[in-house]
Each structure stands twice: as C-alpha cells, then as structure tokens.
Image 1 (cartoon, rainbow, N blue to C red):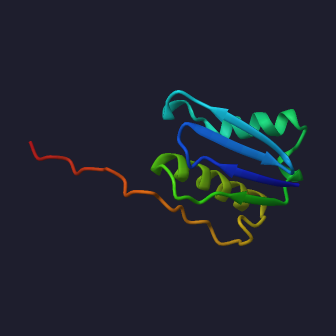
Image 2 (spheres, rainbow, N blue to C red; image 1 turned 120 degrees about the horizontal axis):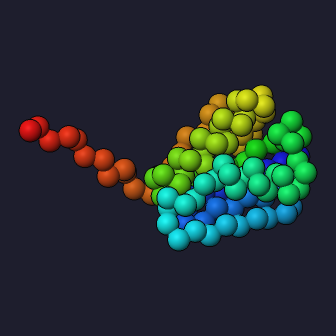
Length: 108
C-alpha cells in the first residue's frame, strides 16, 4: 500500500492512500496536525501501519514548519516500518522556500 504526504502549505495537508486523496484545510498553521490527520485517514481506510510498503512525501519547497513536519513524519514512518521514502532508505531532506527566521538571543 502506497501513501503520499504533502504538508508544504502550512494551511493545507494532503494525504493520498493509493488513489484516494484526503485534504484538510486549517485557519492557522498551529492547527495543521499532519500526523493526526494521517492517522485518521488510515483509520477511515482500515489501513494498518504494517500495510504500508511505500511512502512518498513532497520535500518542498514550502513553508519551513509545514515542510519539516511532513518530511519528518515520512522519514520516521520509513525508518520504523523499514521501507523506502521517495524510493530510498536515505532520509529525505526538506527543501524550504526561504530560510527560517530565527534570531539569536540578545544579551541582557
């Protein structure tokens, strides 16, 4: 069974299980919950994790957090289930549309 994960848009998640597509739109990136959405889709389709033999993930470019979350979930499932992600056992690297806006702590 093949699954596809796309969370590069931090207001929308797309999950495909074989040829069936599920989309979830949210108001805020904080509401995205990609893993919860994936698990609910698998449950609706009566798919158990051990039924998955192929994972495809959109590595980006996309939002920093959305892309990182989707790629991390795909890599974690690939590792745990000992299956390839995007055709390889090597972890997928996310492609961001812009560098993260992280600043260093200011001295007091």
